[in-house]
Image (cartoon, rainbow, N blue to C red; front, side, top):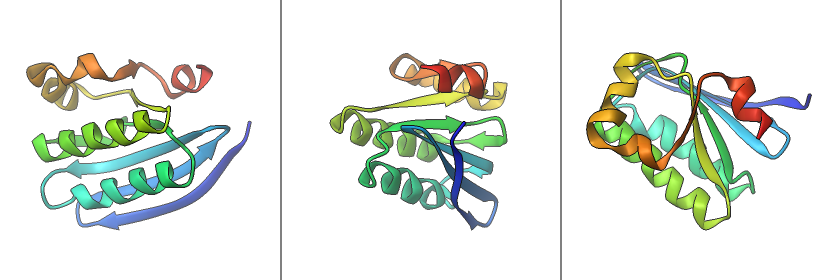
Length: 122
């Protein structure tokens, strides 16, 4: 498997790692995604699409919290990825994070996977 670590960023309570796996960019945010930390996720997501990795796999297994600002970052990334023929896949959301998507109905516009391996098979 081609799993190349590309980079990482950190802003306060959120750390974001990016690696490539074939045609996919695997983006792993860890910590709290909110108004104060959203840029730490927005920037690498946008960079992945600009670099030609429009299939974004966001591994949410280490994401402890997500508010509406975080949700908007993911929705914005989805629009950019889809404009380039890609998509955003969400993986292993914890219940507290999944709840934001359920309440807003946003779960209907993302493909959600239970595991990273499942997301990378497609």
